[in-house]
Image (cartoon, rainbow, N blue to C red; front, side, top):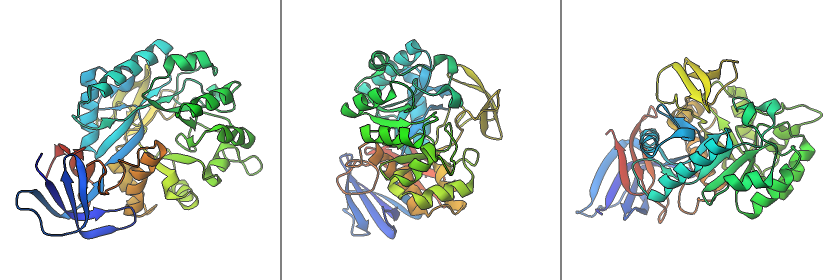
Length: 383
């Protein structure tokens, strides 16, 4: 494979190199730093007016472009994968909303088949996120109440596989602590979500291995000054990382500022929580078999409950920067290295550093994606 060199404004973990350079060899980053002399046989991309960013990592996404991971064929997953790459995402955890056990098991099997094929036609699927089924029906949000189950180790083992990396559950439910302890020993990341957990429930769960919070503030007990509950604990306990959806609907700008001022940036993870409507126009869609109405880009069930989003990661970053929530460097960090750290792949992905996988995204000043590279393969090119 020919050596490729990208010259432009390189976004590092702590700064932007205005006259930077990234060199790619054999699917890996071989050099990151100030511009230097280029080997004459290299393919060079002169991108002085563009940002060279680490590829984005989305650990909470249900689908896109008219397709839902719950019922996607191999071809459907290729389509989702390419669409996500066109928005700068180089790795993701396909996320399954709570559905019937047979539906969830079939979807897990299909995603595993896709992962095992090692095809690179877009975003790399690096595991599976199960959002349920052990949730609190009182905070179900857009999850199907008829498919929500009580914590049960036998049912959990029906769903578990080597590719399940992250599970969202309600830690206050009877039997949930046993599951948390079991999952922790297996190396699965446990996240609290769709929950009415009190602060003492959270303390017990954290001590057993729970380490993450699914879409903070959404689908959970509200913050109260005498019983801070899950939100209060999540904000001040830095053993916990938190997901935020910066689409302008799920969280107000004040809350985004609150979270990013309280939490260290490596504990704040930008997610899209996107559903099949992402990338398409307003209209009628579905999520786990439920009707979803999208108007002005806002996705809701007929009841009015928010039903995921139509957000793309480059737009989430744009919102965080243009609304002056955080700097560009920090927004990119929260979309790349923070999620990589949460799921334990920061040794090879999440930042532009020598010897890491060649996952990178080229952005213009308006946050439009111009090129996406996944493990050295140029997947999307709009330069």
